[in-house]
Image (cartoon, rainbow, N blue to C red; front, side):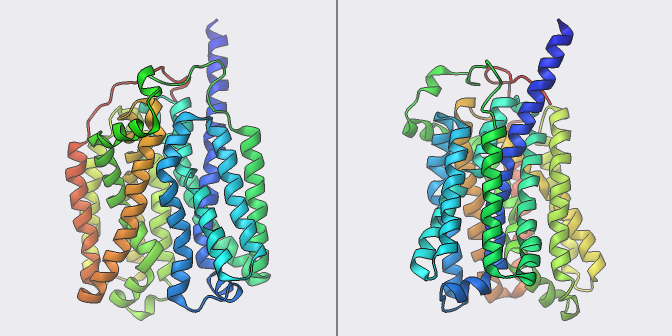
Length: 419
């Protein structure tokens, strides 16, 4: 009997991981779209007759606007309906937007289809949380969530590197078509491999009354939980180095502060931050799963982040030193990934996706605010003055971590595996 149960647990573990990884491929595709907006900038400007850089920024912002508009309904929908069906429909929505961008040649319809791409992508990360909550007890969710996020972040690298290779050897149209084909493959994978929950298991809900709450009441309950705010803001602020440096002003900051001679090295320095984050995320997730508590490591990483940022005030650093510092910074700030399981642990399993929708608004909205504030600070205090925003925000995360509950009791029916 014991061997039969072990075999069942192994099968459940395999199916759970397969569902998480396949769902993460949609997150991969979501970040791939964001990266392609940079890779195909010149191509899009010519194809859609976009006047200049400012108008192009407005055009690509439709993607993020679509995300933000749908974050709240995405969480509410995923908590009430089959995650697999929602994933299929959201992938189809994104593919309609991608296909539309291939077919049109003028700005107005292109803006509409870019918005549609954003609508579909809003479900990506939240769906992963819903799948993880169905297959894993939340106290053991740090590692699978971190692995899914790491896989998703590879989508950004994929769009920049592979997209650029295809563009340089063929055309922007070929990149668009390849992107569509990739999306179709991911859609087929979701249909074949994603499973909502373990066979024969009831929905992982600790409070039937909560499960039956209307959508509006569900969201108000999530809003009233301070742990969602603490964990969401912690993740958002610790994510600022990526949002501000990797996705915005990083290369310009390196060149202005450390010298023109680092112009060719700046992309590698930014990549070091991403690589550190991708390695650190699963590592810290696994450690905190084993510890049974996330708060101590979150507090420690806040302190270490503050100190690893201080050497950047020495303007004599060379490219090698900057790569090492940014890599270590990525390792430490990957503690941002711990905010996601904290949100999951802090809410009834029936509200996990809704809670993540609030977290997503804080994280993505915070990143957008950070980029604008960083630009404002550059104009008034220069690049090094603007950089001061990052260690200040890292210091604030320490106080947010202090208010996060140290240990969340297991909620609801335990999942079938404790990976």
